[in-house]
Structures are given as C-alpha cells and as structure tokens.
Image (tube, rainbow, N blue to C red; front, side):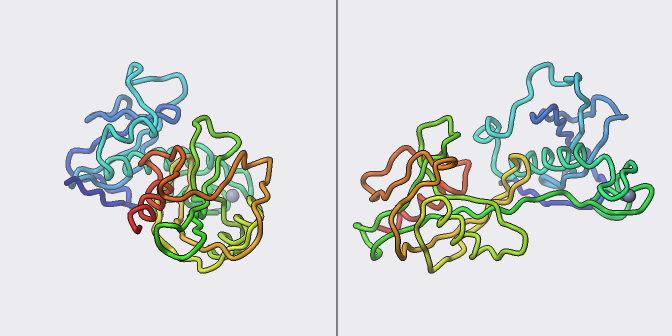
Length: 259
Ligand SMILES: [Zn+2]
C-alpha cells in the first residue's frame, strides 16, 4: 500500500517524482522538462519526494497525455491522487498570488514557510483553503424506514442527487454552517449535527467537512438559484448518486450500511 506524507519544507530527498501541472491537468515524469519552471515540494510517496512543476501556458511536456484530477481518480491509488491534488492546489495558489494583496509588489516563494512572501512589505500568503460543510440529513428513527435528504444542484451535468454542501462563512462555526446552509437551500431546520470525516477537494481549493444531521422541522422549500430538486429517499428508493471520488458518496454509503 502506497503512503503519502505531506511536506511543507522545500527539501528534496532521493529521486523526485515530478507532477507537471499543465493548466489544471497533471502529468507525472521522473524528470523535469525545464529547470526554469517554478517548483513546489508536495510531500513524499513511499519516500520519493513529489515535486509539483508549474508548466507555463502554451507548453505541454505531456504531448496531450495529461489528465484532470477527476479522470485521474480510479487510475491511481488514493494516496497518489491526494498527492496530485495537493500539487494542483499549490500551483494554482502560486499562480494566483504572484503579487502582494497589501502593496502590489511581486511575491516570491518564502525560504522559511510554505508560503508566498512579499518582496517589499513582507506580507505572507499561505495556500488558500476554502472549508465547506457537506451534510447527510436523516428523517425519522434509525432503522429501515428512515429517509435521507438528497438534492440535485442546478448546474450539475449528471442526473444525480447528493448531500447538501456550502462554504463556511467568516466567523462561523462548522455546526452553524451546516444549519444555515440547509435552511437557506431547502428551508428546513436540522439539529444533532455530528462530524463524520473530511476530504481535500482540489476543485480548486476546498476542504470538504462531512457531517450527519437530523431533521427537526419545516417543509422543503427550494432555493431555486442553487437547487433544482430535493427529496426524502428511503434506502430502497435511492436515485442516481455521486461516484466514489466524493465524501458525499461515503456519507450516503455509510448510512445505507446502517440498516
Ligand atoms: Zn507587500
């Protein structure tokens, strides 16, 4: 079993693996195509250092062989996918933090931190991570008749239903984010919010934080700008579900296995 260990230092040991980030696609090679391209240490996979390489626009050292992270899932094991996701996140962050947000001077990679540092005022920008809660809401007592709330987003290409999710606001706890998002999106009140696990979600820089909650009151009233449909489903009447890449599917599978 492969293991991935995250690194925040710039030290490269052993023979590195280079994850070339081409646009938002990845291509792994045992050598770097061009030494002048920016590099970021990602961590190590079974002791080999993984280095993300920021490939400039218009270059393609993969000759069309690069794949996006959604396609990569299923082609590699999970630790390797996590390492590739971190590579894309670090490169995306560096590309979007080339200038200081305070004084607009150029930034450089910090020698001390895994961060971009302003060359004029010293402001440090760490990799951006946007936390989002994702929740499976159940209604009724535990057992075979219990129902789960699943919804379909207006912008989803696939005809599937999933858990409700939303970004955490400044100054908000995770638990109050769960309650607020569900009230905003489908109009109901939930309680008994319980943490179930988390998942880095590099599209482009989220952290999905998974919860279970129980229905308390209210009727489904959909926020039409975001939710195309939502409903209560028993385990034996489940609609099309998201694939195994997402923590949503893990939350649903965990609930299904409880009956
Ligand atoms: Zn500055």
